[in-house]
Length: 319
Image 1 (cartoon, rainbow, N blue to C red):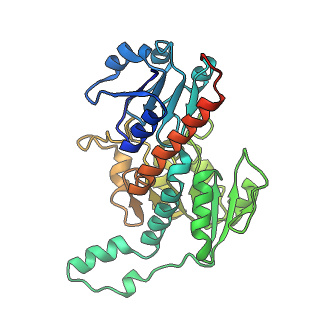
Image 2: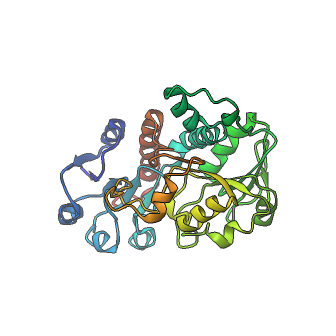
């Protein structure tokens, strides 16, 4: 019987699904990287989120490994190129969290535009400040999306009832204009956007892509939403432009300060820029949970099971 090593916790249906496909599934919640390195050679499959980095050092020891299933979308904690060299299939599951991310981005934007964080806090203090909390509408504004994969397209679909013009640019995709979005050039994004939403993976190409030089290319003062990865945005430059007014407001589900497990911010040693960011009323923050719903937990598991099942059908006997 082939074996799958669960490095991170997942929905129980993922384990159940793989067992139905004939795998033995092992999970060791208290193990650390050194422990996984010691046993990884015993497994044909790995299921992971972000607990450790699957780099060359550990993948060299995985001599029987056939697939890695990343329960999520981002693959930055896996050396995908090296895995491919070794004939290891790398599977992720952006389909499972696309709807959750689209809804979360909408929710953050509505919270920002309608002063919901500020208004809620004031009402709880007995303050009834209506004019001070007059909001903005999405209708009539131009939303520019960079990255039109599962997440970008889900966000466009969720926007369809708000009366906004939705434009999208994707360096690696063309011909995707439809009833939800108009495909445009990056120059069009810079010239027309009121609200910028980022939906790109973290790669060497996108790391700190959104810096001061990038943001100064926008013809208008803009709002920005980032539900992709924190290190896509250079926070120092973002905060400076929030202070200057070039950025009118920001919705950030991700931060560049996140650790590999996305849960390692040290409250006793906060970066100075982050300390400034969290004091801004025109910034909405959430702890990397855009794709983290009860429903997406199930969908992510089902997506991985389906992709492993498809992989088994195409894998030659004896592999």
